[in-house]
Image (spheres, helix red, strand yellow):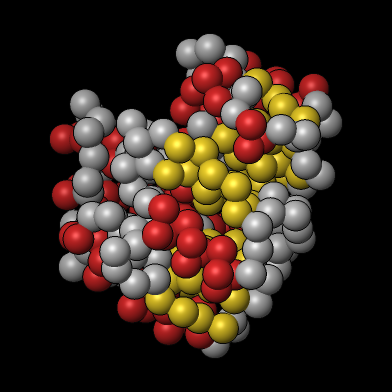
Length: 251
């Protein structure tokens, strides 16, 4: 699944008002978040991707988390319908940008679907049915993208990809709690060490895993498996319940 492009959007002035249950949300530093985001963008660009950079969206606090706004497979993109009404205004600029490269369709109610629930594998997708994505969302995803979508049902979690990431060639990085999910059967699994579960979400860019700093045992698991790793300082994004894949759409 070689990717060539990445769509990103810098945190806006209202980023500190993000939807979050994190106990340190009140300490979000927008200036620091922008600096960390800029390093993230430069890292992806240096890995050879063409960047599509959208302008800030100060009307939508979570707008930098572009992954939730669209799911891309092949030449098609499904523009998502967030379970949070306050996030539904984020999709306009994303849809316009993706329409220049892909065939686009919008998810319609009663479907809810967010990209943070969708794990991209070489031959299929695995989608969480969670607080943010429902069965109607999965059906519309499969119908429009024309791909098999297996599901993991766990209505207690926000996003499935907080617990699993595709690395390369059928290998996933996964927390122990989700390692035995039937939908992940047949995959090689690298298990995230206990206490480092946040690091289960890494961004795989053509064989390189971009992960947050501060999780040395997970970094060691990846490197022992022969994965090239780049670790970035990303302290502000967990405070808004965000992680590495949340900040880009790769295709």
